[in-house]
Image (tube, rainbow, N blue to C red; front, side):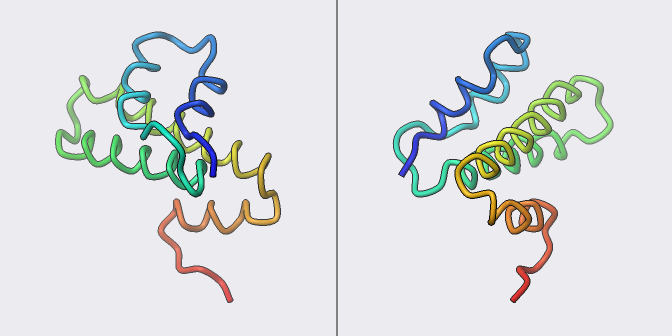
Length: 99
């Protein structure tokens, strides 16, 4: 169990406040079985919101926030379970797990 919001706060230190606010709002607080998966899920949620307004410039911040969340998810996985990093990357890309 780990806290995805705590991981987000640690990894987003020094980021632009507007971007941090956009991304942080999607991150679940409290303990989670897998912080990396929770951050990846937050990225998917932010991206889905941006996709509903595809092409609009006002969604550029959401795209940057989703990108930051994906990066954070991969950083957390690399730190906590590096042997499962490729698995998470494939899941984020929407690929089927490898046997």
